[in-house]
Length: 443
Ligand SMILES: [Fe+2]
Image 1 (spheres, rainbow, N blue to C red):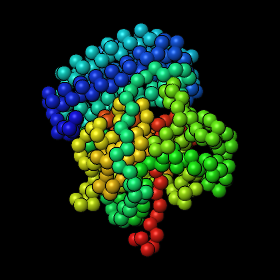
Image 2 (cartoon, rainbow, N blue to C red):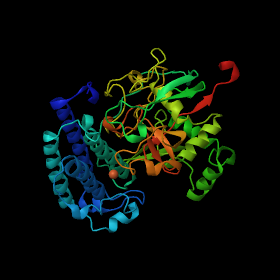
Image 3 (cartoon, helix red, strand yellow):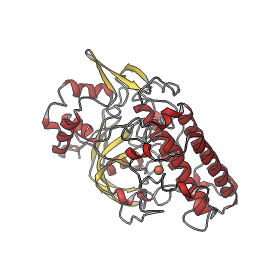
């Protein structure tokens, strides 16, 4: 995938969309075929839907946008719209709904897909904003991949033996990277107005002026995080905000989710395997409050979203912002750990080919990175194609995460992509890196 969507049109664009739809479907099928029907119907965590709900919901969104809206076709199953509307039923209520059985769901998503491919064949891919450069198809590809990542998180929360397979990630090839990298003061272009499949919250491109700052060259590792635990970080109120402290006490936090004490060391549960925590991997399954407390313990802070994006995208030689840290071409296995190719983050230093212009590593892939920022609209934001995509989530309740994880597909990840979640959440594949202001003599 070295040709970007923007450079494609006509038949080549249709082929690219069809391939992306197919890749997403293979993944959804793999995540559901791995378990038997009782396991697919069960709710493995109060935070998650039953997998069979995600699966049919993927098909329902595809029907709503591609079959009915873009294609102006007759509904396939209008009667189930309400069941699979994410805003109508909380996740905790979904298991008790009269959901489609596994076979019904499989048949439904397959029928919808055939119709969607027929729409793709016959529709112009320009003429109105919803279909320009195949946007609606790109939105549906990303929607399915995002649910696949959610389904992967459900697999991680599920108790039981391993059912998913993947090769081990690459080993570290660069060691002794500088701990932090300086990004000088100045403005840069944040967000995008040109990325074909960018979602409404990534738009429009706008200039942001920020002070010089230091940012970690790699995400915080399990080894570093263990030192915070060993130093009593979870017991010392100095490192926690009042809200963080309240949550720490109420939830009884003492280590990242999935970690298990084993004498003096730590084990972790990873997709059904129990194994020693690898010290060189980015820490995973920490909430925003834990990331924030760690940063304060090391005398630092989380980067703002603007700082993260400048470190990732700004090219000081040309002054422009790249699509990805390494440049404008799409992700490859050499540049980033994406797409569920591996079932864990790679150790820090494993992706020198993915470093940004400033020399910041592993910004894309491996782990989502918590930022200091609340989820807010960019200046000039316009909700598209519907308010519930982003707008209803704007405000101080949600923190922004950047960069994507090993479970994020390349189609749903780019330098401008914004994810968001509550600061207490630990089920996502999230870690973090730290930043700090430059001191007067460093400027
Ligand atoms: Fe959804």
